[in-house]
Image 1 (cartoon, rainbow, N blue to C red):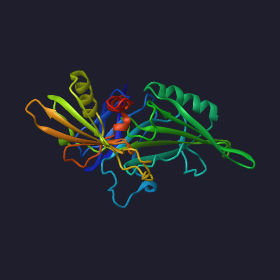
Image 2: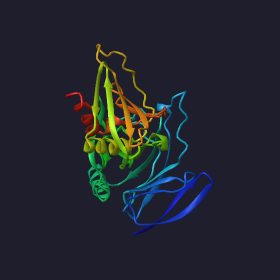
Image 3: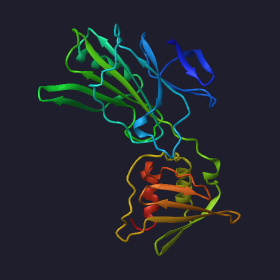
Length: 299
């Protein structure tokens, strides 16, 4: 199926012809990241913007433009914002961008919801959460979260979508919204990658030091570390209580020519740094990596 997608780039407005759908288009950094989640004849291109709810004074908001091409229920037309529609909440991350569009339709909520289930199914999306809002008179809004992954609040390769409804019809029509969320992951610096010729790893946790020379373990750990994403500045309370337990695991990676590369894994934040870089990597996104590191200490 061919679509013509309208989106705004840093250099202005452009019409782009796109063949196929259900994929992300990422070109030069001055161009938008575009997600095509549309298999319908009617669709809308939604440009996501930084969310003011998660703004941090010490973190610049994302500069990269993100566009999500979404299907529009047949016959639905744009509506004014309906603030009473609920959603699954805002991921507390300063690199979050999101956007919302509203529609009204003569179809029922059940018909619209069923149609979107089938549309998003084309791209591996399923309902991963749902909820309601209400008052003393009853339910005022019903909403559904769609994703094709499990970590709703983490940086992912595709956006999360919220489909929400006002329970009461307005002038005989159903009011609904589509909201898209995406966390823009910063690029990973080259100096945070480990070389492939690591032959020995020395791990220190508290007063305990262990040396690993098993080549399979080393190769697996290097591969998993090199596949990690950069952390994004989430908003959360720092954990300062360690109950006397070690909070850091220090590593030294030795290459075949005896070059030593240091690394530090924080047990509190599940992040990892490599070498002299200050950039933290999301070790917590790889349970297998954490399991491999803990196994050295018998955990």
